[in-house]
Structure formats: structure tokens, C-alpha cells
Length: 358
Image (cartoon, rainbow, N blue to C red; front, side, top):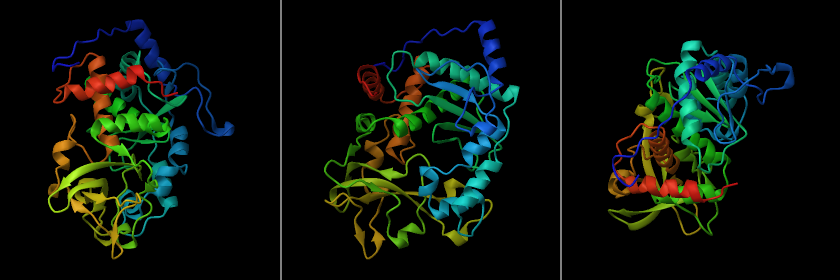
């Protein structure tokens, strides 16, 4: 792993076993968190990810899961809800949940095939690692209208939209699932898992500080706050060198380039997202000046040069580590990726080999 040409891992699945796997997986989950009256009892599962059962959800099961309130949806900024529902009006939580629920569809045989193969290969790639995961992970299919065509996690589920851009090439499906896997692990795992892995990207726990969340923002900033569905809290910070302020302890925050009234049905996340850095005070809260959150452009700091760590998507520490776990499992599945910072993967592998996060 210390070189740019990782050793391939030989992973072979017997044709008969894979055929049986695909047949069984079409019938979805053995059990879900649905009420008993709506549960669909199934037999067989996909290969486990460590001790975690993985299954495909029916449209009915998916609609229930996507329509259920959770921490992510409770913390969602009004602008984010409006963007997802495609309206310039202030979005309500209920409208957002109903919109997501209506997007659920059934899996098809052709849709399942590439993802079942990826599940099989990730199961092999996870052997020998210690990653905190829930008892069950559910794979959900949607018509792609729920999250602006993006893949995402909700609680213990991974949503994979039916879209022209949806990957079918195995290395891509392995990478995408592994990426989403980190979000779930960071959500359900202990504090030690987050502290240890985030440190690889330069983010450290706000020791002795009050933990803060992105829900506690000045009113003026709140109107343009954009919520990352995978990272809606700020418990870690990174020290950057600012052009005007010297070394500053900051947390990345997402703002919107557009106001609520400027949203249209065709607005995309890329048009909205504006990554900025918010300094923390000695009390561990974002510094506020005249009711405005004090933020600085990323370009005014060395943040872009100290955070890449094998990925260009650096809007949050979770995104950085998710990208690196994806590369690590892709490598262990026998698909050597291009690695700019192999030592980062070396360190991540050591952490996942040697630490007990139970």
C-alpha cells in the first residue's frame, strides 16, 4: 500500500453462488425497521459486511424509511428543503419527507445485478478490518427526484437513485458503496472512531470546547445555510493559515450563492454550494460579528493544499475520509486506483486493522 501500485487481491465468487445471490437479493430484506403490519418477510441475504446484514428494500419499505423523520431531516436548513422539493417557497420538514417517500421505487433484476456484485466484493474487502456498522444496512432505489440525482445515506440506509449517471462498472459501484459506508460508520460508531479517522485529514476534536452544531447559526446566515446531509454537526476543527489572520482554527460551512427566492425548478446543488471557513472562538463556538457568521473564502487560506488527501471533494472531514475508505476498499477488491498520497491509506489501514471500535 505504500507504493502507487497496490497488490491486487484475488477475489473469485463461484458462478452458481453468484446466480443464487442475485436471485435471492431480488426479494429484498429479511426484515426492516418497518412496523410489523407492513413488513415483508423474506428469506436469504446478501453476503454480510463484517457482522452487518445487507439487503435490497422494496418500494414500500423504502417509502417508509425515506418518509420517517430523523436527525438529518430535523437539522435540514429551510433552503435545503426548498431546493429538494423544487420550490422557491420556504420548505417544511413534512413536505421534504413526503417528497422523498414518493421517490421510492422497486428494484429491477437489471438494476440489482451490478450492486449485488459490488456488495459481494466489499464483503471480501472488509475481511480483517474493524469498522463500526449497524446490524443491518438497507439499499434503497429511487427515481432520483428525492436528492437531486445524488446518492446519499439516511440513518442505516444507502439510497442509489435510478439515473443515467448511475454507475454499472464494478470498480465504480464498489467505490460508491464504500464511500457511503463510511458515512454510516461515522454516524453509528463511537467518538474514538471519528476522532481517529478525522485526524488523518488534519481535523481534531474540539477538546474542552462546547460541541456546536450547524443548527445554531445567526439568523442572517441561516437564510443562506446549506446543509450537507452527511455532515450536519461541527465537532472537529482544522488549523489553517489565513492571508489576513495568521493561523486560525476553523470549520468548513456550506452557504448558498442564491437566496430562497432565486431558486428555480432547474437549480442544481453545484449552483448553490459555496464552501467557506468559519473561525471558532476560544469557547468553541463560531465567531459572530454583528449577527453575521464570520466566514472567510477558502481561497484566502491554505485549506485547499492541506486537505486533498487523495480526494478533491473537501467540503467536510467526512467527505475526505469517505473518499479514502472508498480507495482503500477498491484497492482491496482488486481494482488498483490512482493514489496521490499512499501514506494516508497506509495509516487508515493501520487504524482499521489495529483499533477496537466496539
